[in-house]
Image (tube, rainbow, N blue to C red; front, side):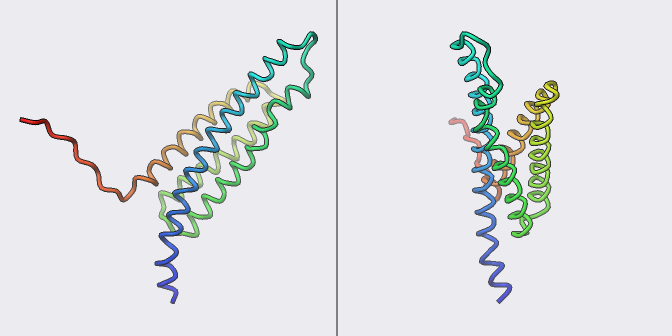
Length: 156
């Protein structure tokens, strides 16, 4: 019975892992977009105000960005758990673990940057690393096991 359960669960875990990488990729793209929205919302409000923009207004512009961050880290944790539970291999495990570590680092950098603005630079660069890592993992996951397409031959 155990053998039939694992043969039944393995394709489901692979499929769940595949979809999780895609959802995580979309969430990371949305997160970057929300950071941009927050920055430009503050600029717009500063232009509209006859006085300086209060700190609360600035913080409010980044509320969605701040709320999505922990959700993304949670998705990263779920990705690692699926990789472990599904026994999807050392490569998936290393990528998932590395991405989770990057997510935790991103969260810490975001918190620290409010007191040390230069850390915000590292927060932005780490976001690019997360984007690239998640994109590569999603691509690898969706294309693994597929036959390589042959290059078209020129007509003679």
